[in-house]
Image 1 (tube, rainbow, N blue to C red):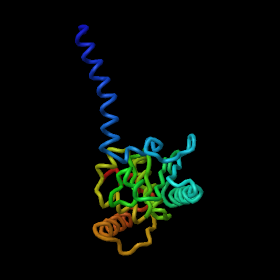
Image 2: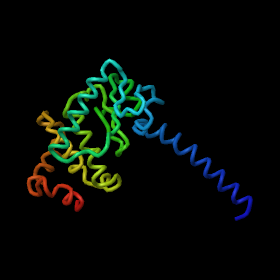
Image 3: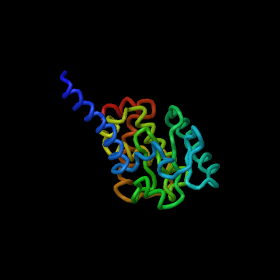
Image 4: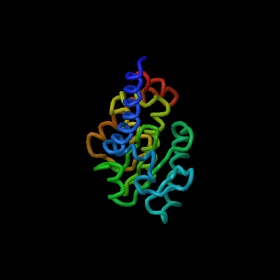
Length: 194
């Protein structure tokens, strides 16, 4: 490789190392869950629970602990300690790009809980999405039908809202019918075939 070609390759690599993270941070706001401190959200050293309002940290930790126990006993254990950012205000939620959503899970990197989602069924719902990513892989999970991805989260989180607004209620019904046919023991194997 010539000296000029090596310099060009080095410049390109440097450009990619700088531009890609900055673009992701700016354009794909849920990615900010990777470094919530840079978005002004407090996280204790090594903590996986980050809160906008430190006075609500115990509440956030309790919601996550309940959700982890629920998902483990009703579906399967979540591996590791997923990062959760709990926003108490709309401004915080907007920083992470929630928009009209109550919460969002960004792959297996982390979850943002908006001010309307401080409730057990919302945390369970997002943990189920995290578990889907762990069990299926991120790309395969993205390629699954929406009725399965969202229907599973609404149905198995025991979301008390009934009926949900469409299309969510239809997704929950379709998942419930599918789950009734395949059963809990074959959930992941059959999901792989979708």
